[in-house]
Image (cartoon, rainbow, N blue to C red; front, top):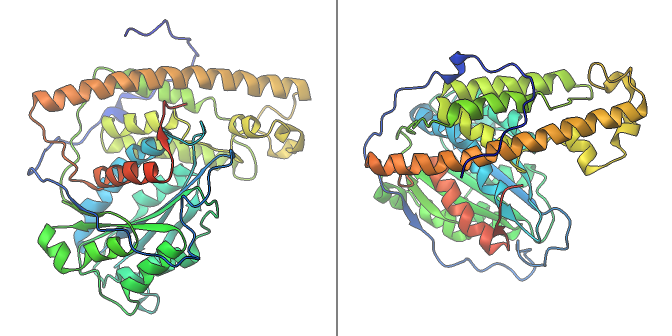
Length: 408
């Protein structure tokens, strides 16, 4: 369907260097293997994610990603960097009682000998946060180094240290990815997985390597105990960059979208700088990654309440009256109260129009890419981390009472 004439907002466009992409290589064809055992029986007192109906407040989604960062896992980290925004889109399309969930994401690394042995060679990199640019920044900062991989311990740490939502109708999940036996270390993975599901946290395991090796390493048993999915991927499979005729305009609109953000507070300037830095990081992996990020930024899954005035005022109309002049974006301190409100409203209208246009173009791009994959006989079978996560999440969100809905 042709787009209606677009509203034009004068903004500088990204330079052509953002379109530099990596060479496309499909790699070997690999088929994902999914095993889901019968749901583990939980004590009667254990809270289940669907124990109570959703009461109408914005539903919660908490996702913790636990990545093996030993020497052999560079490919896994690359997939996580490339596919973060595809994963975000999965949640942005979900609805419960008409509401898009509030997505928070956490990141742990484990199996890295550069981390203290006394702490199990693991580290909480990012606590549960709705600042997805911080998550992207952390993924690009990860490095690999050989070490011992203690799956039970890192799961136990994630369950203990993260401030998981206590909403009975929310969705809480861990995705742990690695390639060594699941049963190593001083913390028994069986007790860790059982404790996770007792807290309403589903554990999904992603073994990187041959299916039989994952089974012998007990990756499937960990998922079975915590009512999750056992998945098998090729961590070295290249995520193919398929450009489309829509990419250039989406990227231009993404730059215009950035200009609608009114960052405020003590870290105001830093938020905007990091948003642009993560655009550059995505662009460095190929135009497709930047386009996926732009699509995620144009969805309800990308929010900046408490950092951006447009999102904050949409959530609480009284925010402007509480922000000190010193914490306002440049130029707003000299405005009257009415001028400030009108300025935020103008930016909100601009953002809504840009989001609508980016979403429409993204839909056209998705159709184009799907047709290109078919034409090129490109097997896009779920053989990467992003595919594994989105496949499992789709099933589990449905079980938690979420429905697939049109992005806001």
